[in-house]
Amino acid sequence: MNVFERHESEVRGYCRNFPAVFTTAKGPWMSDQRGRRYLDFFCGAGVLNYGHNPEPIKRALTDYLLADGITHTLDMYSTAKARFIERFNALILEPRGLRYKLQFPGPTGTNAVEAALKLARKVTGREQVVSFTNAFHGMTLGSLAVTGNGFKRAGAGVPLSHAASVPFDGYLGSDVDTLDYFEAMLLDNGSGMEVPAAVIVETVQAEGGVNIASAEWLRRLRKITRDNGIVLIVDDIQVGCGRTGRFFSFEEAGIEPDIVTLSKSLSGYGLPLALVLIRPELDQWEPGEHNGTFRGHCPAFVTATAALEHFWQDDHLSRAVEQKSALVRKRLQRMLKSHGVDGTVRGRGLIQGVEFGNPELAGRVSQACFERGLIIETAGINDQVLKLLPSLTMDEATLGKGLDIIDDALASVLAEDVGQVA
Image 1 (cartoon, rainbow, N blue to C red):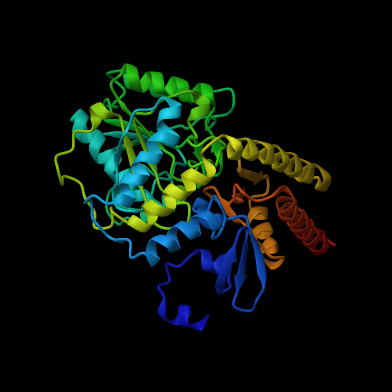
Image 2: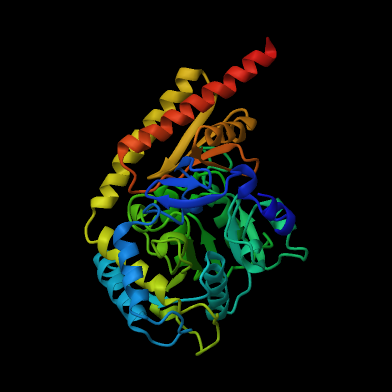
């Protein structure tokens, strides 16, 4: 690993927690240059919902490339883009009764967020955007302004303005509806809060610690924004594309956002691709007013289309995710109880988190898991949450193997603590 340590910037992060040089991957498994296999409960921070190198998607990609399919088109038309748009409408939007225009910004999640914020400000003529405590929306300046993490925000090096943060669901305790605070601030001329252009929200705050917004809370947020002419943006970058079960994480709440941002698992294969879904009346862009060099990445359109056709023709995947979700939650809760550990299990679908009463445990368990051949990250402002992101297609037996490793790792860490006390 000397080549990385000698030449790569100190900004590198995940490699410090998972110090291996990976070479190949298939399904839920990754292999390093020494031939050791690792079970992947990280999935590229939610990029690989369908696992590594899924065959139907790989075949579609290789067939396209071997036929000299065009790779780069900016926002010019291509058969690859046309096919994706047709299938996305037919398989995702129309069955859900959703009408959105599709905007392809630059290929990353933060590009989608920046475009959404910019459009909301343009159509409303207002500047302020409201976000929530512990939110994470990306690392560019506009996205950082609506991100809660102080460490990430400090890296901007300039003031992050035209944004206000209000408490997320549960931030002030389970018995407090935080939207009472937001609505009071919004309606009181003496509060100092201007009517914002937009509210941006994650239904599940993934990086923020697997914090869950209830369906009731989301429905009330939708009503408040609609009643006050505020654009509601749902950031579904990490928890969309089936991560919570249904394709969109907001479906369970029965709401219809004005704008939705997607990326990460949208391409289905780890290729960069981002999408902004816009309520038609809000699509007020002038031609070329927002652009990006890699907004026409045709190989990603090809893999995204293959993912839609293979996994989203029916609700089979969604039902499987719900079933596996129940299995994971039961095992994690039993694990805490059997070890006598203070902790809380929370999540939706196959994004699940364990928040330990002792914040140091999450990182130590993650490290012990890696030593045992499981890749699993931490989340939350103090990395106090062990965050599970297994692929949606992982079979239950393999899922059980990963949970066994977590159990063994937790037991090992606790035994170390007992030994130190003795």
